[in-house]
Length: 458
Image 1: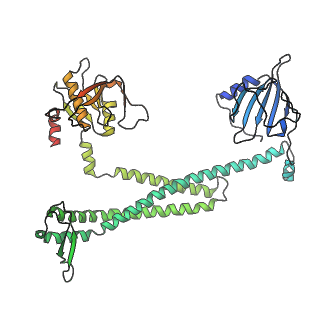
Image 2 (image 1 turned 135 degrees about the vertical axis):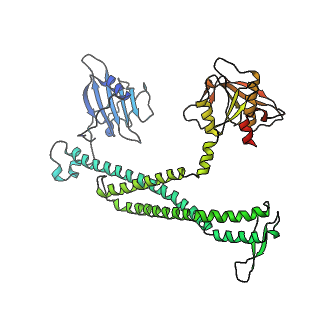
Image 3 (image 1 turned 90 degrees about the vertical axis):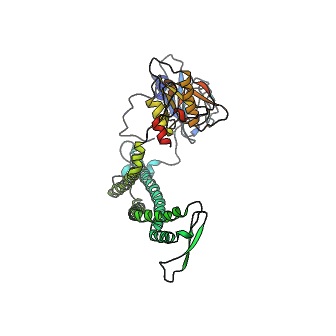
């Protein structure tokens, strides 16, 4: 036990264990403190107000992987409270780990806490005076040990993050070197494309290679050029020109990324290597520790910003195409009601959870993956059986079903669709669902497409 000069503030609400202890030992008097059986056990024998027959013992066991605190009562020593190591339940009789010296079961002979040596003699002479010298002397050393342990944990956490970043960047560097090597060959792709273009008459579909004279080398030796047999001669020529254009265009970008990655890797290696110089540090207040942690945090933030920029640097054309794409596919039922189908998992969530109104109808094919389909129904109105059949057919067809058999589709009101926290994108729970049996149609889904969807599907 160690005296705590500056204990932390008590929590605003006592724990359940504290409340139970308060009920059991409030108003008690400590009659005796002993060490039963000279084991690592401390016991407080408690008595209550005069005339009371209640006698309890507070026992603390300080052995095993986990200690244990107990309160036992009466001559049979029934357990009233236990906290810590298992093995005993409330109401069971308590047996000490070692039999007491006098062999008694109802009472334990009083002993005194003993140690194989006098700890005061192990202390420096200048620290032996004053109140509780052992506790004060140990307190300083335990505090230093705790600070060293906290510091080691902080440094280890930073080191692990730096090593993970370094591993990621090493893989990135390897891929950049492969791409850079391919880009540096853009002149070779251009030359091969020119040779194929000048000998286009020798090419035919189905050829895997062709030998043509190389006008770019002295003596015009024959050179074999690989072809893709499923491409036409013109497309084989264009393939080489396209690789040349891509290589030339990406050469500067890849070279810049390669150099930036090398700089960051070198900084990470230096930071990890200098960590060994902090082995003698004992506190986070050390200037060397603060400087190293500051550099480590800078590198971690730098990597995070670089990843964010990489995600944001999308080609403008692809980004514009994605933004211009409608969020949902649109159909029209025979009754004239709007049918909406989600595009992808997140599109399904957007449609079913945030777009659908309570009176709309939700459709999803049974026992297989597929898009969420919503049939728009105005408030106060109901959908006809034909509209329900059309929406169910859209859900089945977009999930991949083509017949010739039937397909079961579940449907319910949109207000009964919910998404519990933690569910994966596109996954929902539905209540009060009904089943609709879908059969094949001769005209398929094209009859339900709105004009805009028909144009985009051609």
